[in-house]
Length: 166
Length: 296
Image (cartoon, rainbow over all chains, first blue to last red; front, side, top):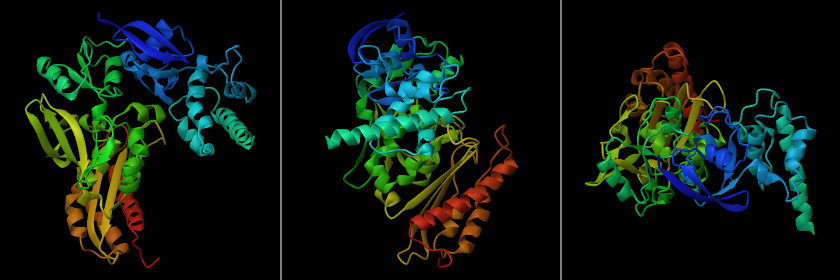
């Protein structure tokens, strides 16, 4: 089978992987990069458990050809921790709000929530729900997930305000 | 791992067409949100793919010298919805594609893929039909211009010749100017669902804002392919904007459709939806156009 070298930025570091051209991005990130936060859920782009950010936007890595990642910037849940390994505010908010039960969908939800909490325009609960509508959770009933995102969004807006004030 | 056989990665449209000539059995791969799913289901096992996804020349939206809005086929639904030209001149198209899937699907799904698939439920199809889009189909022999109205042949089958590639979707100026549209998607869920019925209506009012100058109505899932309600459109032309117009159009629109029963909905329910959605979308389009119903 044909193989190819794909060079891309993964969680801030430039990486090259030798892959089978038939690989999905989720295959490459789990198999070659060892990033196990990416879950193989439905594998057909319905559940969002494999969500990663590509150039800042959420994509289902299960229906994305690995060779397309050439030259792109990819962010996975592993890339959210600081260099010392401490988890980010959004991850902490998921814990604090009880937004995690079995945890399988959590990395995907957190990646889908990054554009929301980084957005300059605040989103209300219904818009937050629209933004996470490509992710499925069978445990929590979603409300606590929305709570966690809403809380972190407010915190980030406050932080940006203080930053500008200083 | 996807179960395809060979992958060709052209660096230009020209190269893509040469691959297609050399390997006629190979499929063009755009965003993959249909092809990868069919591969996972085993329906395309062993196929060969020509990936055009990296061809940025097929991406983007611009206005041409004559005022046509040109949408390149690889433009994602998110890009269509966010684009200033679409927001300004054809907002209804952005509103329609915003109802597809969820954010991840809208980031990968392309407007060209949506219409080349030829399914009746495609959310972009009815609005593009309702705006008389014109397609640019490119082969090594040259460019063929085809009205989108003539593109769908039967479910899943479109008038795309074996060595052709869709390279542009144009909305002529006369088609969008002074024109206001509204799209309604009826589905069981607000996201990640396929339309039970889609209805796109747009209207251009006469200068007095009290008469219809041009009305266009298109549906998804009201027939085996996306369709226009041509007979009621022409009858409505010149009519006064009032409640009578609304009931005339929503009643007579049934002459132009032939929905079927499927597991999503019965034929009878679809006929009901067609009338009700036409009524609501027409009222919304008239209001957007500055028309007033009953002097309100």
